Length: 443
Image (cartoon, rainbow, N blue to C red; front, side, top):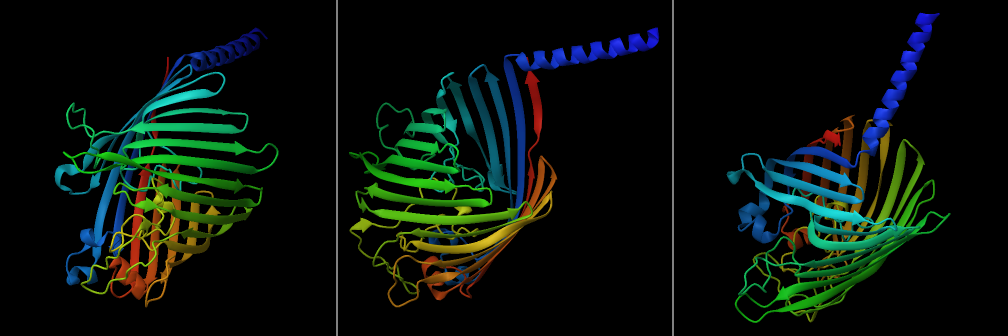
């Protein structure tokens, strides 16, 4: 009897000590985590995405636009929390295997954030931004370098309301003389003033966002009188998420002037429907329309195709995660057209995903693409694309993904983008993601 009583008493005491130690660990004020992310990606391309100046200079290079390479990215994210203070520091290295100089090393994130009891917060430093579906503002994580911004973010979140104010002022250096001219910096803007507001309706799966941006770009030349010209973007994003799927819509309008003083008047609209009858598959369909410049000149071989425009009417998708939209091959809104202006884009797509196993997902999508501007003498259709993808999650922190895209480009696509002359463009990639949390310390 006594041995059993002592054994049970010892067991209860051990459980109490363990519960106390866990509680004490959680109550400790300092929390430090370190996450390591490594990404390796091999690509095979037949048909380039680069601008004509970058991708070719001769007729021969236009026909044989083919390349293979392996790229890598490493990030070490150090996060610290104490009371209502948060801090994060993320150095990043990216490059191509065998690259001269061994790629580039930079600071991807370095910020501090303090949140009050009432839900107000301030965050300052280099940080990533993600709003709504990331069409206008997003981290663009598909690109190896990603997008981060040096800015001050003030805001409030609570009771279904979210309001963020973003303020940025960029310079090339801390020069006392000649330090007002800004060009070729980490971001293309000199100043940024952005207000984002989101509201989730109570007891109804509807969310509405409003966005206003005032972007200052530098005009003039270094060593001469310069000025900052401003362009504005305003719009809305609406999401309705019933249990069976989701329905989203967005509209944005651009006004103001570019850095050369040319007037801007452009717009875009997008709708998307997702239906998920079960946990094993979902179906999606959507349409994007981005306005284009009128009287868009389509040059023949050896011609520049320049034309005079009184205003810019080609929509600019600003600082979004472009790879998520407009086709996986990144022909549009990543590279430029042959004359620098844009004929806009119509992108109609349908597809879906299946999960044959909890660790495996497969996807297939079809895109029909055409210009938004009517072209002289040629058809508006750019081509048809099929995109296939697969993801296998070995572990929560190890993921292998692969994809293949095929596009039958038209003669319009060839003349606008200087793409492969046979009209058959393809791209395949294989990516290994390794993202473990390697350190968790409380003290």
